[in-house]
Amino acid sequence: MPSVSEIQSVHEAADVLARASAEGSRVSIDREGGDVVLSTARLDRVLEHEAGDLTAIVEAGIRVRELDERLAESGQMLALDPPGNPTIGACVAANRSGPRRHRYGTARDLVIGVTIVLGDGTIASSGGKVVKNVAGYDLGKLLCGSEGRFGLIARVAVRLHPRPAATRTLVTPVESAPVAGAKARAILRAPLAPSAVDVIWPGRLAILFEGAQRAVDEQFEGAQALVGGVEDEGAIWNEASEGQQQCRGRLLFAPGRLAEALAGLDEAVVRVSAGAAYVPAPVPDPRDPVELALAERVREAFDPKGVFV
Image (tube, rainbow, N blue to C red):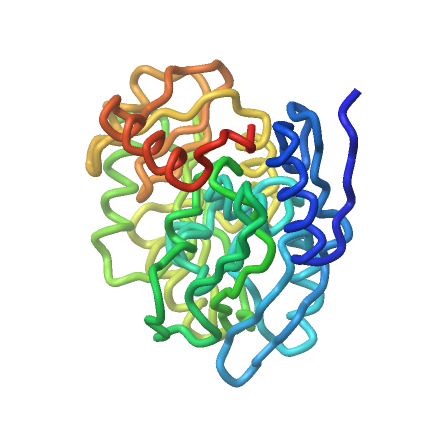
């Protein structure tokens, strides 16, 4: 049986990893698979919140919803809405995101600094507390999507956004793949600034608008005039989140190829601008062999002993 270590500090994590490296043990983070399982459940504090700078530094074990509740007190948010309620560390490790990716990007676009612990116990930091800080290598972006195999993500500095005063969701039917492509293209080419544009396939295109009430109303009405549809109270985003969480595969498609992508699918949650369709069945890794080989070389540089699994 693997041993479970609930770390409470960066230095405690460094001690555990240094010992594991010396003993030749394998380590997994917040999941089974290693001789030692590192749990970040108790690494869950907000260390700093600079409301005036729209930034915060948090420990990796804090969960998205709990952080969102803390930030709401200051009228701010971390614009990540991945399905479920993952930790911030998991969001970075898997580069997770949700419907708001259309406007705000993925974890990679919101991380401005990171502290990690390498497999030999070395503590490394990069970035800083402000959005335009350019000190050191950008380890934060490199770690996004690393799947916990480069090092333990211990602390993350993130960029925040004001919490919108109003939100409205437009849902319009799409009877076929060509109709879905045409309506999505009309929204993306219009002078609109939606926060999310998803196709819940088959059948519906959902568009989220956020901001000041007057601006939201004007954009909602403009979009409705373009593609039709009716207002939704937000239930469709719960449906999109559930579909994404239950998916077993992710297909990628080129910009402007939405209709072609949908034509081959029976069911999917499609993030239009990201060119990604979350589907129920497993699919081959969408990354090409060159990209996979490069990722493995980077992993070997960070973790030459193969401590992390």
